[in-house]
Image 1 (cartoon, rainbow, N blue to C red):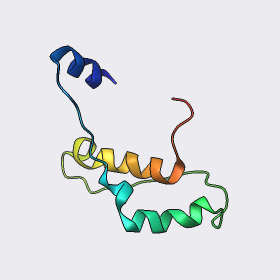
Image 2 (cartoon, rainbow, N blue to C red):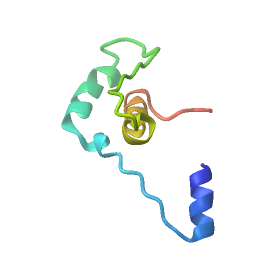
Image 3 (cartoon, rainbow, N blue to C red):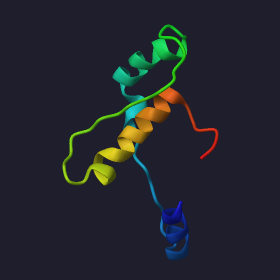
Length: 76
């Protein structure tokens, strides 16, 4: 990530707050996916409310939700 390089040069630390991983709703909803109850996961679609700051405000949480349900990416 380019942001990490900029932080290193400026001697700053960057933190990403993905609190959804501790949310009981996400953990409960994830169980049927993990145990195969819903079948093979083939696509994940997210939707958010457009606040004008969607990618910077809500976007990271949506990407985190995709990773919660779909797992970490194997390649980019």
